Length: 357
Ligand SMILES: [Mg+2]
Image 1 (cartoon, helix red, strand yellow):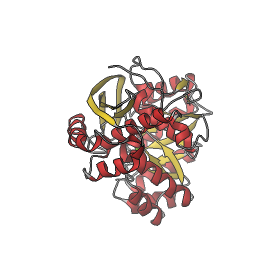
Image 2: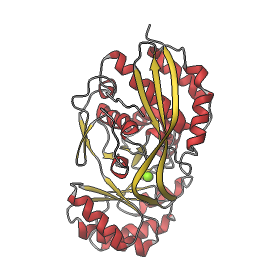
Image 3: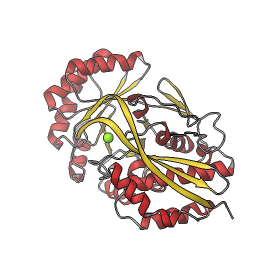
């Protein structure tokens, strides 16, 4: 018998960005997130966060607040130790709002592991204690991209993820400028569904011909175009990752059966922790690569992703860079940050997060 949940607390959590973030599906000037807290009968607080992404998950701040309010009755009064049955029950109460549900999952597992007296990453397996993230560059002109890449290299990032979707010529020029700014950095691309299969292949071939290798090409084509992902994978020498095409374990199975991807980008905001564990298992079994990504989460939401990635130790690509895009605020615990490296070493209970808005 564990400890009962006294309260599910949800509230708007608005955060300022250092500068606008622009990708093929839209522009973000602020992060209008949701803070989720699970408060247990013994006073333990578990933290979760939702970073709604209307064009990716369909969630907005308002829908997340409404959905979490809608499932409150199924959460309060429940035993935290029965987390799996609790979360499968709440997941069945809502069809599509995965982002909102992921915030609940994060808070439940943070509270649970705090009561167990173990760090969250040990709950997930305790494989490693640190991971290194890439840094993502927004869409922009070739000069803007060069300046942003130069700054990233100066800050110690070795892997740069370039948002593309401005057409083959402009994007190819931007990628060459990134190589100029960082002759030794690894470059990956994310088109956020903006390319046709043929243009995506053309882009990779063109920069390859100029001597720039691309480590990973994420979501080159529209989310439903599984054939298109497969086409890109088969026609150019680059590993193809699915992001917007994969929300559920069933999506992962479909993509793998179609031989359409090399890597799946797991984001807790798309599938929650339970879904992430299932997708990771499917990818491991099918010998596919794992990437962990983020939306616009602050330290609170990113802590769960960092602990999940460290705990399993199975992720090849870490894209946990929203923390560099947001203005910092006072919040204890979560993880330690040293340049591009996230460390959970020294975390004692859950995520050790402590935050009073
Ligand atoms: Mg992506």
